[in-house]
Image (cartoon, rainbow, N blue to C red; front, side, top):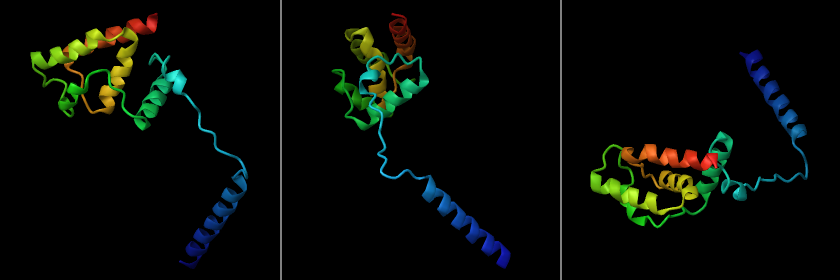
Amino acid sequence: MLYLLLSLILIGLLTAIMSKFSQHKNEEVVMPQNGSECATCSGENAKCAQDCMMEAAIRDIEYYDDEELDRFCGRASDQYNDEEVEEFAEVLHTMRQEEVAGWCRSLTLRGIHLPDQLKDETVMLIDDMKRQ
């Protein structure tokens, strides 16, 4: 038992010493500024998409003249009726194609699930934008 206790103390001391020497003194941590890159992120690069989603999560949520959709927060994507799907479709069809991916990120951050009836069209619009 004594050997186990001494071994743990020794390991703790070695870890503390190694971490002390591995730290760089007077070195500032520089966070990357990817704000301008998110505007051109097509979503093909998973890291780019993840970085943009994380950046969007710490900023205010961007609305695309669709505040009325907030009432659908938490609803499953297969639980919309035709009138409700039409509300989403109206927003989708009135925005520019390059805004669609940002709108989808906005919906995700707001806890709103895109209706199943519009998912294929949305993916197609985003894919078309990537190819341009």
